[in-house]
Length: 185
Image 1 (cartoon, rainbow, N blue to C red):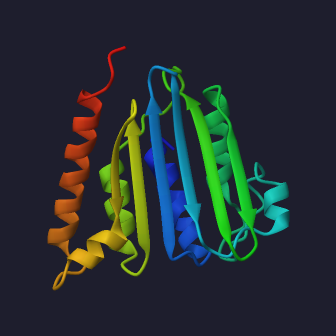
Image 2 (image 1 turned 60 degrees about the horizontal axis):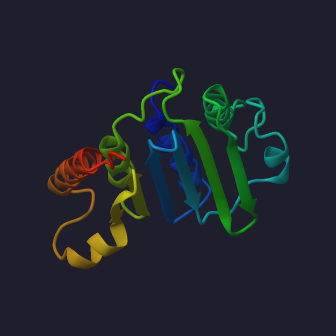
């Protein structure tokens, strides 16, 4: 995949398919430490043992609609290509947590991509699912929690086009502000 945000979208969708009703997405850009960390966690049913044991094998998948499961194997390869790692922790009935690290300045690291589009696509396409998105850039943090937004909204749905547009613009502005506030030390 050309952008890491597409990996995030894929893994989050897998968590939804696994029955998760809340997906946590964390991105931590630490330029001083030359590291990018991505974490995606769900509260779905977890991964079968045979998939966990063969996480890098694209021909082992839990899906019945196709025989190939490239998502996690591609994410693992992308992380390794950038002197990083990928780790999967899954517990039956409790969910799955995927964490990947990348050398931030590694020449082979794909760009992060449009996180605002990724998060709003997830929200718009899954109105009954909650998302908690946390993004840190050099220690400064932006956080979005759809549970909090739902509590504040009375007459609008989260997947209303006006709400989605506002959320996308809010995320883009927040990430731009975080990036410009980066520590110069």
